Length: 225
Image (cartoon, rainbow, N blue to C red; front, side):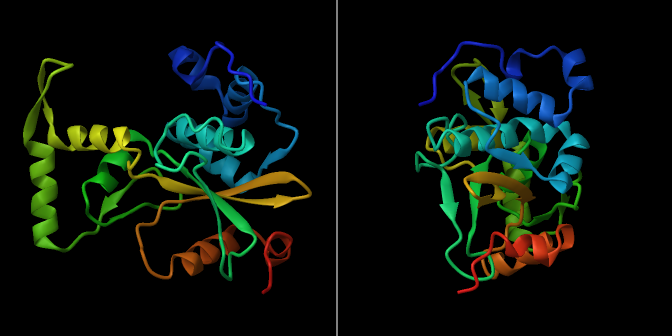
């Protein structure tokens, strides 16, 4: 059972602390704050390397891991209407692996919530617009430039941020997937998948995984039928 402790969390860190903190330091702090054990998880090296180059991703990934390790009790970002926020891959080639929905950093989240196709490089630090549909681009531009009155802030804010706030309240905000596998009751966190494709997604995820890990390593998690 998870005990909810009122200890320091990500938002309480000083700027100078974050500048010298790596991902594992923050994860240790957050897990201990909620009395969640780290003994049953492993952050694999390719994922660690990506995260330590992109501190903007720390918050969302840590929250995703908290959700998994608490068996859904700590779905803190509430970005999915389903409380447990985790899913198993049911089909080959990913059958045997699992995923948890996590929040994106603000720049990437804004780009994805504009409703246009974007491309993120392997370091996940520089999203680029690749949308070619003029109508979609026009709607995205309007979301950025148009404003709406916010009662709480008592001022106008861009429409895109109102849309994102409404989505968050409905647990429908756009995020990405943290991919992980389980061996002998230990979760191995492997990769972040940010793709927007709606077809052939599993094969795309597998292709990205095989670039990071040997087939022999992945076969430990995967089911063959």
